[in-house]
Amino acid sequence: MKHKKSIVTVIAVFAIATVAIFFLAQGDDNIFSDFSDLIHEPGTPRYNYTGGVGMSQIDYMSPVYNNATGDYRPVYQNMSDEEYEWIFGELPEFKRDFFSIVELVQEGKITDYGRVSDSYWKQPEFYVGWFGSVDIYLDNDPDTWITEGYGCYPVIKEGTATKGSNIDVTSYFKTSFATESYQGIIVRPYFPESALNLLGGTIFEQPENPEKYLTISIANPDDTLYNSFKDTIIDNVETGDWMTILKPTYRTITDEYGNFVQYKGFPNDWVQLLNLSVDIASDTPTGDYVIAIEIVPPCFTINQEYYFSTEHDYYGGLYIPGGHIYKTLVPHFQLMLHVE
Image: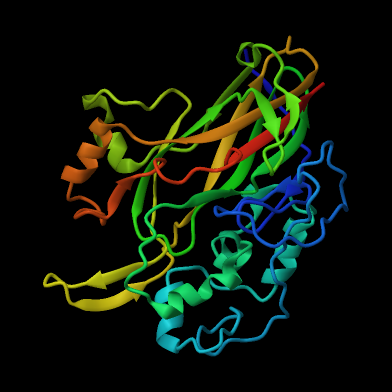
C-alpha cells in the first residue's frame, strides 16, 4: 500500500555531554556536565524530557573575520595558522551567519535538519561541548588514546503523524571529539519497552505490538566496502539496519618508518545525516509510541573483511568494531511519535 507523506512537527532537546533540551533533543556522547536553564519557547514539549534539570547551550559569538582561515571561524587563543589548517582544513567555509543559524536550531525554530547546509552542521562549533574540548587538539598528548565515541544531535525528537502516512526523521550522527579510530558500527532501529527522559526515567510505556503497525528502517546507504563483500558472508546486519564507518576526528600521521609527519583533525564526513523512515499503518491505534536506535557491534565475519582489506585508510590497526565500550544511560536517539 502506498502511504502518503506526513510532516512531523517537532520539539527539540539539546545538550552538552549526553544532554541538552529544547523542542527536540541534542545528544553528545559523554557523561552529564553542568547544566544551564531550559528553554521553553517557541514550542511546548508534550513530556518533560530533562528529568527536572536544566540543559547546556552552545556559546554564541558575534562574527569576527579570522585572517588565519579566511572566513568567520572563531579565533582561538594560542592556535597557530598551521593548527587551524590541520584541525579544520577539510571542513566547509565557516559562514558569517553561523551562530545566528545555530541559535535558530537550538531554539527549535528550524527543525527540518536535512535542509540545513553542511556548512553549519559539519562544524564542531555547531555542537555543545566543543569549546571545552578544543584544548585536547592543542595539547597533543601522546599518552591519550580515545578509541570509541559517537552520538546523535538531537537525541530526542517529538512529533505527530497521521494514520496511513510515512514520515522521515533526520538527526545528525557524529564521531565524538578527539576520537582516533575508524569505528565500524551497525545502527539499528527498534521499539524499546518505554520512552525515557535524559536521566533514564520512564516517560510512558510502549503500546502493545508496535511492530504490527509501524515499519521502521534507517534509510542510509551502507558503507561502500561493506557492500562489496556482504553477499559473500553471513553477518548480523538485519533488514532496516545501517552499517557504516565513523571517521576519526583526531589522528597522528606518521611515515612508513613511524616518524611523525603531522596531526589531522576533522574529516569532511565526520558527521552524517541519519535518516529514520517510519511507515504508519492505517489501522494503527491512536496513541504515543517510541522508536529508538541502538548501536550493535559488527560480527566477526564483517570485521575480518575490514582487517584484510587494504582498500581504505584504516588498514593497519585503526579500524575497530564499535559498540563494545561506549554505553549510555538512554538510547542514542528516540522519536516520541504521537499517532492520531
